Image (cartoon, rainbow, N blue to C red; front, side, top):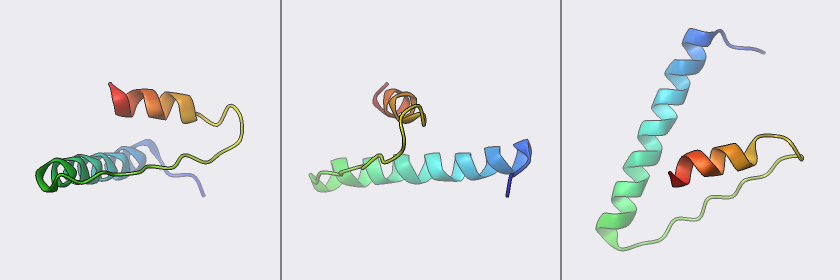
Length: 54
């Protein structure tokens, strides 16, 4: 089921905020976080990883 652009952006923003909160918690607690990327070739994993590490 495809979402329209507005819904997609709203979900993406919530997920990005959750990721930043996880990063802040990790730094605050001196912990580590492991993120696993699964998907077929050309599924966009490289681009997602690049955006996370920039």
